[in-house]
Length: 296
Length: 296
Image 1 (cartoon, one colour):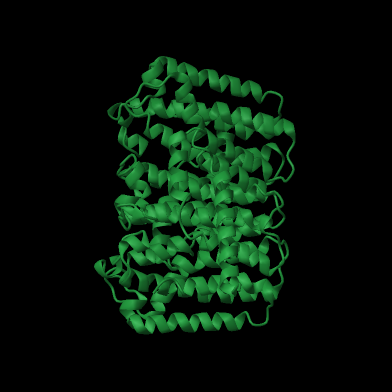
Image 2 (cartoon, one colour):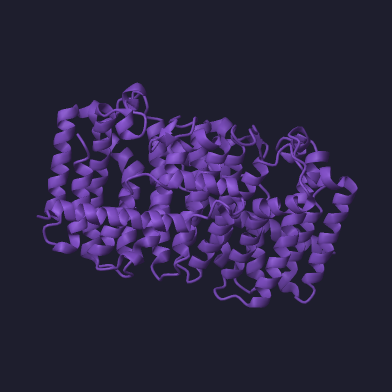
């Protein structure tokens, strides 16, 4: 018997591979000058990661009836922005993390200066790959992605995080920080995929806004739970860092049990919001389950 | 008597102010959350710099008969990219420079982590401000700017520079490095201004490509001469660093006199290429003189 879970797993694997191939062909080859920088960019992006943001772009394209090929640029762009943020976030002046996706992080492998340039160049490439499509909706996609990346999005969230370490945040303040830091790019991943179809209906945009707000939050709560409960080998990155750095997290704020209950509530709310949509929303349902059921 | 030099100075002052105002209104205010990051972004961008790249965008718009208002987004975007590159370039893992535009550099004032995020957020804002115009040519502008910024442009040139320190480069290799590192963004500044008019004639694009290739090179040769001959106070940044860091420069390669002769040759070639154009090219002529006659 093929369960809906198996169907989703097959879809996810196929679309992870699709994103990986699109990323590999978008990134300049390692024999294009400057060779060392291009090798470092490929190292930082390829061969790892769950590609949740790319999957969201493809699933949102499905929701609006657009083919996966029309969402390739969106999937690549959001993964490039995510990879750039990981490279910079791991640097000694930020989180100072030696391990990423089970390998030495980019600055450990190539040095701090190259890692800085890798992040900068990946960001530029994200915008370039959208512009290179020449699609009518590409400018709208650039606008959404730039807003989600900059000071009122991901970078802003990282700055709030920097200045919150060692402080006890209120739940509202924690939620605001994560809406900027993680939520903005997750929302952008969904919207960019939906815009792959060109014009997009209001009901789809409303759904995707609500979906990505819930899933952005769930993603972060699960991350906090895993940081507190899983080991470094399972995570592929250093575990237990939040407590060590005295960061406010959903676990420190709510405790493990209440944090898990929050994930369940967010998952149920999300399924409800998808109830009015048929199988065009199946991949969104699968991603929600995948986010909310990561091993714990 | 009003000389052409005075007319250009008035034009340059007016358009520097125009760029400054456009930058000030594009950057989020320092009381927008996250306040500290926005204050640092404004610190890094406003109140300094010759705004050569913004002037090039305005001058290129004049060449094609477009009003200055249509080139504001281009001028802002290229200055934001330039400012982001200076912030990252000054960081300890890169050039480690404490002084920029006569003030403490961004990481000295706000710390390394914030400086990293300032650069990242300024890059995103550059693409956002172009996309926010909703102009038909904006996607083309995003494409040109992204290419000029990334690994096959400015970031690539910085990486080549990193790995060339202490080596003696050939003149060809030095020119390639600077075409990436400085030339690409100078060319983008001119082309973005020309595209402000929408469709652009081939003869204008050809002229601006040639102009920016010569001026990008001249700009770098003059920079090398000034680094070797001017003092830190005059430069507003640390002088004499090239020799200290054993960098290949046009001065180390050609000597001061031949480097100055090269600037003169590039200036004359540029005037010749502009000969077929009437007063619509006067601002381009003025910028060429300004670049080639910086005090030495």
